[in-house]
Image (cartoon, rainbow, N blue to C red; front, side, top):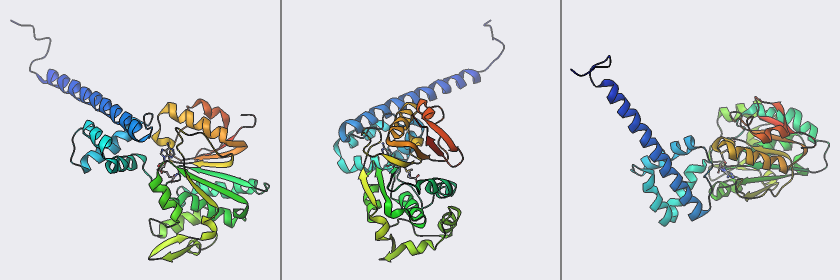
Length: 298
Ligand SMILES: C[S@@+](CC[C@H](N)C(=O)[O-])C[C@H]1O[C@@H](n2cnc3c(N)ncnc32)[C@H](O)[C@@H]1O
């Protein structure tokens, strides 16, 4: 008689089989993802190889579902040979989503503390890195205008996505105003009618020319390109969230280099940079609002 080892039936074995199969599938999928990222890097110079795997997989699964494909590896020949397809995959992976006055507690802190402090400078330089379609830089420019600082400020708004930049440069809002936008503007400390900063063109809303002309829009890749501005304030919000730990640290260090001594940095409220070495270069002004200040001498 065979020993039973205390249990009968095949349930435990079947469970183990399934675990092994699932984990092998995950490993294979991650390998396929590596190959796809390598292809994107070689064919179009987008280096997403240190972007966080979890969010990349989520986004890639959406692309697969949209095109009725099953495996990530099926995307590789398409990315290699079809330029339009390659573009659309890149657009999906770089997520250019934004809204006006997103996370108003940050804008309120900027208005009440940072802009007040910056009043003493005759010229200001502000960099919005990962500006998407412009809503964030328009929001800040409105507050600068209300603080009487816009005229002496040069705003640099950069992003890796040419498509997002084209939209941002046009000054036209993708999403119409609703009560939530007006509410966020007020919660940010806005003290006028938000609509007064826009005019209607063909049923769309376009930001005032006087605001738009203070902003230089430029393509810039935070991963591969060196800094080209020196800034009193940098906003780089909801961009770190896509990076892995090593890349987060590298980009944070880069932004630290671009800030003037005592300069301010804003990151997204859900982002965490506290485990990065480069974090030592900053003091926390408000963790809740994602606001930091470069230490003197760092
Ligand atoms: C979710 S949006 C955030 C937009 C805005 N900062 C906000 O918080 O509302 C992320 C933006 O980062 C940009 N991005 C991703 N990787 C980048 C990189 N390596 N260099 C510059 N921008 C990048 C994307 O194209 C996208 O427009």
